[in-house]
Length: 160
Image 1 (cartoon, helix red, strand yellow):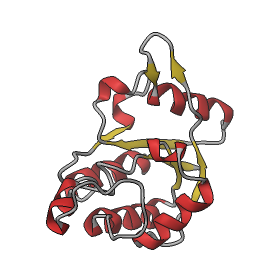
Image 2 (cartoon, one colour):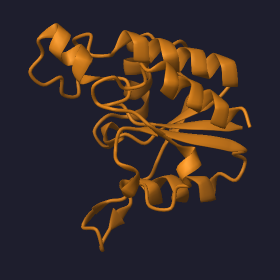
Image 3 (tube, helix red, strand yellow):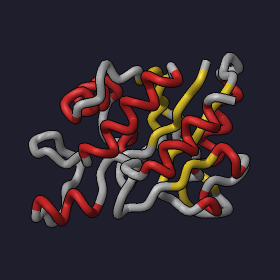
């Protein structure tokens, strides 16, 4: 199975979209169209082309139940969001914060049926402790997953 560890802000929600709509802070809500349409289209293309499933690694998983995340992504335009899970919450005593890399690695340890995976995130690679660099698809807050270059890299990694 192929898995996409998906962040939301900086991937599907971009500053380009927020500025265009004149939003001050989109927050965690589904009452306004806060998702970048190009990023959503690219995610739909990636899901269709690779058959990958989504594991939400975004901090949003902490405040929104999985059923609501699925609904939110459907409302955003993602076709039948194949969300299979969310990553666990892992507090890193040394870093004094959560550790997204460790959260993803812990999920992978408990789910050995994964053949290929990518992490789509706008955080710096230094925040993904233990994730191989070739699995990291870096997005930016300004364009998110709306870049053709980023999309092509994601397809390439999941198609190997």
